[in-house]
Image 1: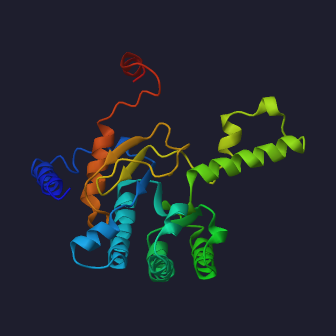
Image 2: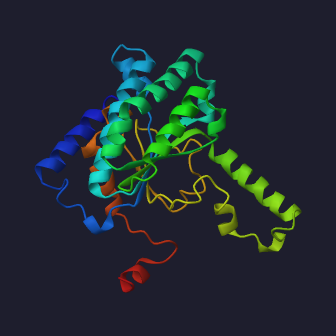
Amino acid sequence: MYLVQPLYFRYIRLLKSSNILPKQLDSSNIPKHIAIIMDGNGRWAKSKGEDRLFGHLKGVESVRETIKAASDLGVKHLTLYAFSTENWNRPKEEIDGLMELLVSSIHAELETLNQNGVKLSTIGEISELPAACINSLNQAIKETEKNQTINLILALNYSSRSEIVLATKNLIKKVISSELALEEINQEHLKNELFTKDLPDPELVIRTSGEHRLSNFLLWQLAYAEFHFTPVFWPEFRRDHLIEAIYDYQRRERRFGKTSEQITLNK
């Protein structure tokens, strides 16, 4: 990993020097919805001789810069995987620190969110979070609900498998109550029971820190998303890395089951 990262940064510098970033980004092909698995806070902190919470604290700076960069580039929805249901298995002191950081960050960033037109929303089983987190989130959601520049979605206490199970249970209830016939159920019905029912599916998912897996994140919604994996740890993720991910996305041919020839004919 540590050998890969210097090579990556030299590659980024080369792209900058050749004016590939950001001048060659196609402004008509910016993903409307980007999802990010923010990974590597703990490993980054360890590499600096610090504890894991220091990495999470520095990760907040990356969140701030990424929101601003995404907004400037015209992204309309940004989903950040902030805390999974599996993360409850971490040491208690780290969990407590993360919850305190969530509350303090919301309070510290709320004015900036409003100034930049950021609307905050959440996905996940929020009711199981500590009361202080729920109260802070509800306040921020209410105070930013009219903002329209970019929608920031925090995935908190989120599990995609649990989300799909919950959606399935809701459909079963509708069948039992005769609100919906079993043979009528289709993909759209299930989609409308998901936490993300009011959102377009992400076109691009980014994972930092060099890992190549989804970790139970948006399994249904990412069916046709493009994937971008970067070796950069989340606390070091900045605007240039987001631009590189979007540039990578724009070089892909999104066929949705069609052939390249069909895509060319339809252009």
